[in-house]
Amino acid sequence: MNPNVVRESFSDDPQQFELLRVCRIGRAQGLKGEVTVQSFTDEPEYRFAPGSVLYTRDGSAEYVVERARTFKNRWIIKFEGIDDRDASEAANGIELYGEADDPDDMLEEDAWYPKDLVGLEVRLAEGNGLGLPAGQVVGKVVDVLDGFQSLLKVRLANPVHDAATGEVVESSALVPFVDELVPDIDLEEQYLTIDPPGGLIPGLES
Image (cartoon, rainbow, N blue to C red; front, top):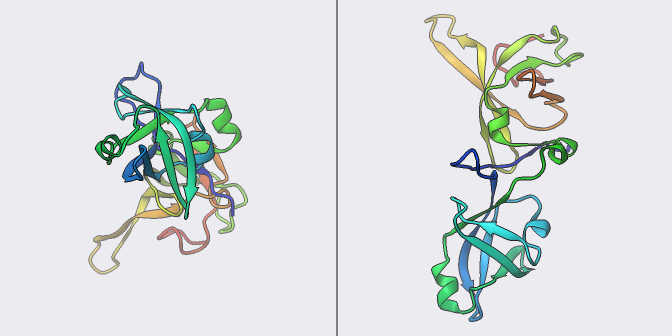
């Protein structure tokens, strides 16, 4: 299963280049300025390459990677200007961001920012496994949940009601953001299509 890629973005100023969260600086490693980092990127070799520039959340301060290495599945980085343990300990907890990729390149690799997906109408894909009409509106994306696998939170167009009381018992569904289930995304027309298995979307049956 090849997942679509969701990338976190942040920008206070619309005129400023868009920033993506890359890592959080952790504990000092040794005495010469190295730090461990918690990585949030799916391309650490690129983001942590020597000479790469990372930024604080507001873009006001730069951190240039001097060198980087891995040890027991952790990234250990030496930033320019952080040359001793005191400086590395002072940097603990700082979150760093990198410049967003070119939108055309992102389209080629099926990468999306959460802000692009939230608000999109969710429709059934053509030839869906449920045998329901293509284009039938399922709901709207209201959130993107990150974790081991990205999930789209969809607010249902037709919430499920309790037969006895009439109360709404299910108003949303979580859809794994993978190619097999989310085959098409059209940002211009503001919709995406899904091909859900039976039982994934409450109240939606063939």
